[in-house]
Image (cartoon, rainbow, N blue to C red; front, side, top):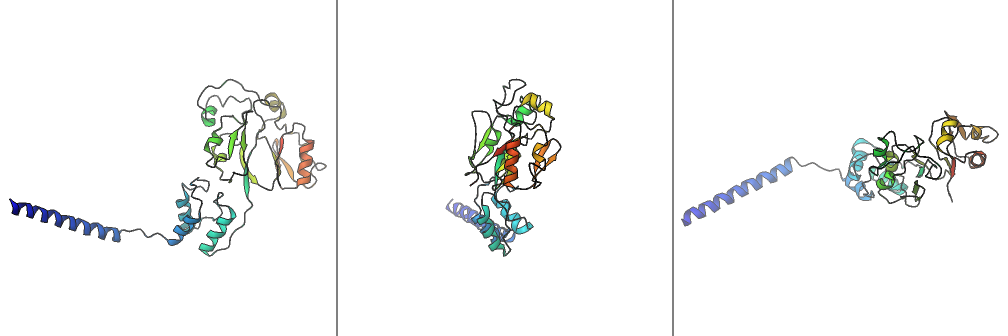
Length: 269
């Protein structure tokens, strides 16, 4: 009996050594070497894994930068300092890109815009839009359910009492998640130096806009007139004015002349 026990122990031990040797060989044979540059870049990324760069996480972005030559400026949370550090690791010139901030291109909250019906469903803008295009009278306006706020990974947004999202610019990293989350495309990223933007995305004509919102752009073209914006800072794109360049004096003229007060003026230091 003792001989059989000893024999069994020896056999099991031998198999263990055999399997261990096999696993050790396989680990060396099929090991995937990681480029040290990927690890270096991953260490300096903020590791927020927000997906704002278009990749599922910071590791995916770091790998794409090293292996696929992806742009080194896609990490908004990291900012210019991260771009400089990545450039140093790769031995390339650091591209400069003006910092951006998220803005809400809709001023039609509960007080300014009407609803076509009362929505009593899932507190999600995309879900609400599936029900007859959403309750908002303006088919382009903010639905007010805060999907963008819930999606922001940096707590840089909240919903106001008037049913519109508010951006905390000191916390905003311009990751763009709120932009891709909004089914109405009212969220946008603009340069932080841009003081004025249009708070409306409605493509409807004046009569239809006035019927549903008191602050919607009516496409009057006044802001794009040469006497208001002689620099050509604004041109019409269909029924909406489009800001082509940042000329503060001209844009402030447009703000003052706008009959529906559709423009928004940011507090820019």
